[in-house]
Length: 212
Image (cartoon, rainbow, N blue to C red):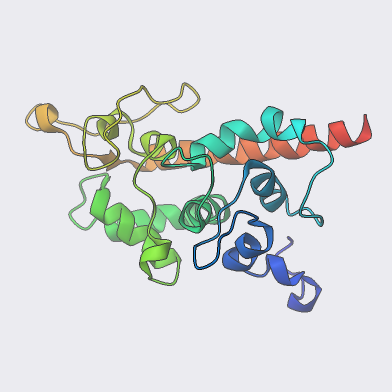
């Protein structure tokens, strides 16, 4: 939405990340957290007025890549924690990320380790564990580069990072053999740009399907 849009003109379900998630998430069971299906996810990302879509095939074509990127534990659904992590990446300006990166890289290493990265993203939310980034899956492997795949502190998987993001690793000869997960500002910027490109493609393709 435009930054100067008066609050009363913004639909209630778009006024916060939690409200948006609760509005679109259709997978629910009594006493259990809600989750998003792929169609829910598409509607939420594009802020569609309806909570269902008329072109379900569009989910496969447009959003599956992004959905699988965000689905950290590969269970076929998106949790609030996963959705919140994505919205923080999409909505935080790169300039702000650079400033936060400097703040949380206390010893000026040039990268953030897992704990520093988690603290940075907790500062963007309400400070609860629910807002802590899920440190697993394809999205984190993009953010942390190849070093993330070598450490069991993320998700223990070891596939190569997607070709769309070229990781910039910060390692030295001394610690290369036992590299811990680390995120450089270059990785963060490249990942955010890739996510925004995917959303723009999704919007464009869905509009094309609608008018075809």
